[in-house]
Image 1 (cartoon, helix red, strand yellow):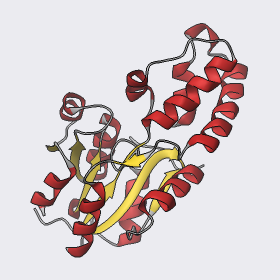
Image 2 (image 1 turned 180 degrees about the horizontal axis):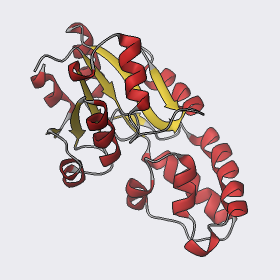
Image 3 (image 1 turned 120 degrees about the horizontal axis):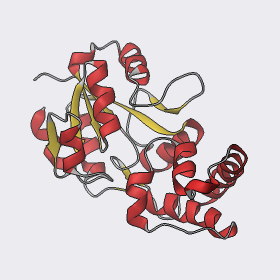
Amino acid sequence: MNFKAVIFDLDGTLLDTLADLSDSMNSVLERMSLPTHHLSDYKILVGRGMRNLVTSALPPEMRTGEIIEQCYTAMFDEYGRRWDKKTRPYEGIEELLTELGSKRIRMAILSNKLDTLTQLVVQKYLGKWNFEAVFGEREGVPRKPDPAGLFEIAGIMNITPAEILCLGDSGSDMTAAINAGMYPAGAQWGFRGREELISYGALKVFEKPADLLGIF
């Protein structure tokens, strides 16, 4: 395998953002006198965009258009205040990115987090590494598992999909990579775990970030 580039997912792959997302959503729910969720529950609730997170976190009987919109606005504001309180790169990520850079492996990020938030988070925690493209969820571009964003990045890099490895922590990431003709690789340290990654077609699952270097 001769890969020239890696496209990373963000939440659950490069950064552990779960506590800030959990605290933000639970704060919104508490203000509405609704049940909150345990931190571990958010490993399943997150990953499909903020609106889906809000919808899934609400009790089924509360999932009306008006309430979802109200909670979505509140969640956007709340996370906007909390996004950098507990978020950190996973252990070994900084060393991985530095080593990939030294090997001249090109890098990019594609997240289902809103693009405005993606840019803020990447700038603060990952700004010292060279990512040729950084995209979150944008209007007019379908989120993963649709491969549109991956194709866009491949075009920016001018690299064929078969020469790109996609590293993510969810089935959505694996499906997007497969649909784009890229190599689907799983981050076992992330939110969803090895079983989901394999069931969605991961060809390789790495236990820790440093293990990724062995494939280059």
